[in-house]
Length: 196
Ligand code: GLN
Image (cartoon, rainbow, N blue to C red; front, side):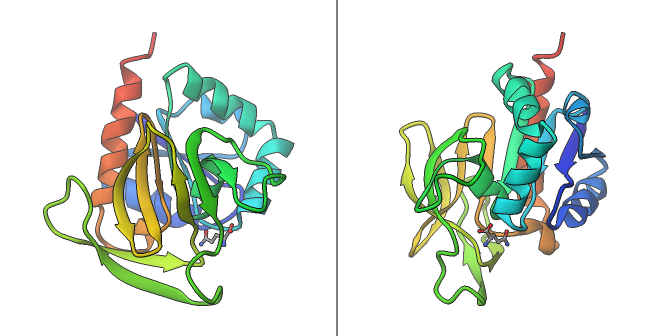
């Protein structure tokens, strides 16, 4: 079982450290060949336009979609990563994105763009709140019928699941609580059953 972290731009090191702290093997993913080595892939926070463009430039978008569609890859996007996974990006449809998660996101949706915020979230499946850190994150303004909302704030959903896809507007990799990453590791284990 190996978790990949897309290492094109953004805070991929923090995700790598968190997954390692769970005793799970990590592979940094920069080239399409490396997608085949992982059972789950985290798309980190950063700048979604940059991550999207680099993904297309290196042919990673095709490799990710192909392995995901074959049921052999779980995906988790945080913040910019959520935008990259989304089907629709309000007002920015032309920026490269994977379009797998049936939601519409609004970028930089939490008040003044420079501001970050923290909030204790009630999360489905967790018995105590999760302290979530938001940094110029997106909010979800539309969810498709197969999308389950795992947590929301006043502005809208901020943590969702659609089958083998997870996405959060907040940054669990910047805290000490590993429960959100644990959920993704468990989800990624399901893709192992598809291995031949
Ligand atoms: N504002 C960034 C974007 O729209 C996301 C910020 C983040 O990932 N922390 O791409």
